[in-house]
Image 1 (spheres, helix red, strand yellow):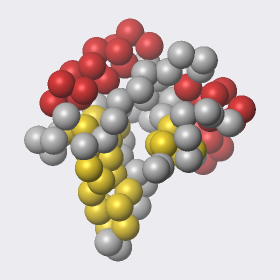
Image 2 (cartoon, one colour):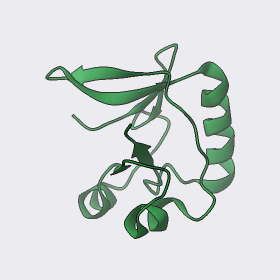
Image 3 (tube, one colour):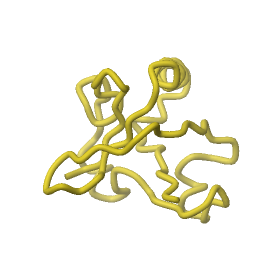
Image 4 (cartoon, rainbow, N blue to C red):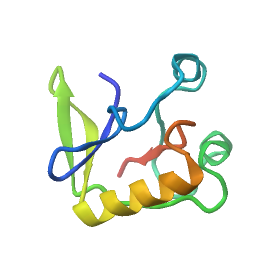
Length: 101
């Protein structure tokens, strides 16, 4: 029931086989942080930094129990996410905040 990020073609980009995540980090930090606006809380800002990569989901997907937990992003944004993650390695550090509107 953990939230994931997938491409519109169904490729798992976050919490799939592409990103190795330390289980203890998940336990202490959580998989994602949530915010209601782009004005991030201190907790969220410490998670993603002062200049985070901002991508907009094209839709949400139900992963289990009919809960919309997964964010689906465009193919173009998926490429951007993977390219930036190669440089910064932020996904393995759980540097993800979902903005819920």
